[in-house]
Structures are given as C-alpha cells and as structure tokens.
View (cartoon, rainbow, N blue to C red):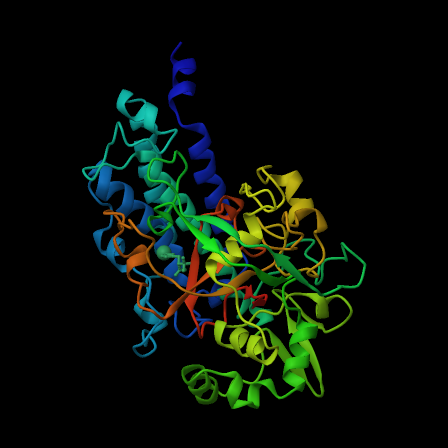
Length: 468
Ligand code: AVJ
Ligand code: FE
C-alpha cells in the first residue's frame, strides 16, 4: 500500500509544475551556441552563464535557507549565482568571461542541486505537517519560521524560474542571429490568424469600481507586491481597442516624433539624446527600408509585421501618446479595461472565467510560450474583454503611467525581502498583460510586472487612453 499512500502525499501538481518550468528554462540554454554562453547581450545585465547557475542557486537558497537546512554542496556558487544586478543608476558591470566558472562545472552544480532538492522534497512531502499546506496558500499550518507554507515557497521558485524564462528570451533576442540555434519547425512569421485589416478605434469604459490586489487570506499564490486587495473608483475613460502597431508608430516617426522636444519629458529627452536613440530597438534600417528583428530572423515590414504591436520603452511610449494627444493608462484603468465588465462584476480573465490551457490558448492570445514573436494585434477576437478591447493578455506587456509602488498593507516576503521593495524607487513603472513568453500562471489579474522607463529590451508595447 506504500505506493498508493505515496501518490497521495507527493504534491504531484506542484512538482509537475517545477519540472515543466525546468523544461522551459533548460530549453533556452540549448538555443545559444555553446561558445556564446559568456556573452552579455544586454549591457545592464549579467552574462548568460550567470542565469544558468542563478535558477538553481535561487531555488537552493530559498528552500534550503527557509526550510530544509541541509549542508550546501557549493557555498561559493550559492553566493556567486544568488543576485541579479539592478540596472538602475550606477555604471555598467565590468566583469569578464574569465571571471565565471566553466559551463560543465555550472551544469554539474545545477544537476546536484536538483538531485538534492528533489530527494528532500520527496521526503518532506511524506511528513504529515507538509501534506495539507502543499496544496494551498493556507497559513494555518505554516512551516517556515516566518510562517510561510512550502506551497508558497514552491510557487516562488516556479514563478521565479518562469519569469527568467521570459527575461532570458528577450535577452537572447539581442544576440546576433548566427549565435543562436533555431528550434526545429520555427517559422519566421506566424501565418495570419485574423486576416481582416486592423480597424483602430477607441472604446468607452464607463465609470466604475475596480479591485486591485489579492486578499491576504486568498488561497491562490501571489507575490508580495500583489497584497492587499483594495478597491478604487475609476472615472470614465476611452482606451485604444488594440495595442499601438508598428504601422502607427511609423507615422509618429515620420512626424518627427524622435526629434520633437515637446513630446518628451526632460529625463526621457536626456536619455534619448545621450544614447542616440532614433527608433524602436526591435527595428533595423536596411537602406531606406525598415525590417523587424524577430527572435531567429530579420523580416521586412509587410502587411503582417506592420500590424504587430510596437515594442518600445516607457519613455518612447509616452512620447507617442503625447504626439497623439493622448495618455498612457493608469494601472487601475488598465485593470478595469481588461477584467472589468459592464455589469460591474470582475472576470478572472478578459474573455471570461475559463483558465488558460494548451487548447484555449490558441483562441485567447499570444502567451504561454506558444510563439517567439508577436502576431497582428487583431489576431484573437475571442480573447477580447467584456468592453470589447483586444489583446489585453499576451502579444506584449503594456506600459502604464503608474509608478511601481506598494499597495496599502504591503509587507515584503521575509524570505525574499528585496523582490519588490528594492524597486519602489519612483523610477519603475507597472506593466500589465504579458507577452508570447509569459507563462499562463502570470496572467492572473493581480500579477504586476515592472521596469524602468528607459528599458527597451522587454517585450512591451502600449495602448493609449483619453480622459474627459
Ligand atoms: C519582475 C521581471 C521585473 O526580471 O528583474 C527575477 C523578476 N526578480 N529575479 C526582473 C526577477 C529576480 C524581475 N521582474
Ligand atoms: Fe532572479
């Protein structure tokens, strides 16, 4: 009967998610030709090799530090691979490839950490006090000294890894094409899904109340910055039915958008000028024609790619909005446009209450690793929100005008104090929605992403609003 008992105790669902997340992150490292793992595609961030060790060091430090208390197999690596760099302020990192251990050594560390953690997880999952709180966020039978369940910690490990699967994707995006290995069957541009021309218009969202954040006693997992739940009144506004496309952004450029001082804030103008920025990072000029730098190809602007959402920094998005005589939405407006409804009841997703899965994803949006690149902004009519606004989840994050800050009642996770709090500096803006490389679990209404206004690398675009 041991086998049956074990199958009850082992947290299948959570461990399956750990394994699936590992599959996603492992795949990314196979896309880079081995000699390029020591490259730094984004000057502000670590070399690729760091992330190979980081995901396991993170899991180890988190689970072992708070719960297991096993002897470390490599304390030096636990520290070396522990921390990200904060790209704000200070100079750029100056470390050299030779400062990092060899790939084989890092892979060996990864393998050993996984074996140790998995063996321990299998064992503790049989201990009675872990059984209940493996399944929910329930704090009544807490296990860490700070009162957090293993369920919470495993969710932190899973979502941390999945977030890096996305940040690594856009990091590898910046590598020269000949340093990457194209996945089998990968096409340059996804065939058209919609076919009809994009009919841009603005949609009226009546005044209403929106709920932001997660209740402290909610059973579902959320990061520290998602707590607590609170409501806000949102006055009437109009919002773009679709994200701003490459085609629309070309008009802004043709109108001298990058050269007109009045469209830019002081800070953004200084940044743009100092860096000599004159077009979106994902665009490339060939003679007098633009092409799009996709993940594994450069593709000319044509009927399809022109209708992809434009990916830009928040500074560039704000300049466009000013040129158009509009504004970027606040976090609360975005939330209401995506999850609100005419009758006042919030939905779990813009399309309703169906939880995304492999089948539904195909109808509802470009997210959950289905593709590497965007699709035209009108590709998923069935994913539209109650107000008829398209493409709110997937196909690129959306910048808001809201500075990333704590919700009322915020408390940092004691086992990861800096996750959000380190970025409450007035320089980071909330992004909502998700990209082609965002895992479905992070499409929940309360998930908040953030980057600083001058960060061009992320798969993020925007749509505009008008207020009375
Ligand atoms: C939440 C995506 C802004 O990439 O800097 C990963 C996620 N934090 N490891 C980031 C994160 C620490 C974070 N973002
Ligand atoms: Fe990290």
